[in-house]
Image (cartoon, rainbow, N blue to C red):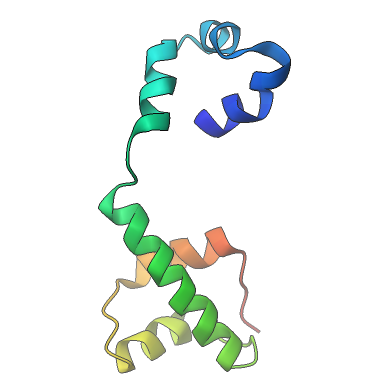
Length: 94
């Protein structure tokens, strides 16, 4: 939601968008000031590792092989989390 408001705020303004979406403007502003959560910070690190493993293996590794390779390297992360992050990054195996 905040990304939608960020995209359109120059043209329409924050308050009118929030009114239309039935969201308090204070909610938007609070979310902008909030520090990233621990999960968001960890995800950034995992995304870097996932990209590295995918690239080192010529871009052919899918979720399962990336997850297994991370485990072999001692990076403990859940398979579903790897799948979510791979989708967010936009990587695909062969």
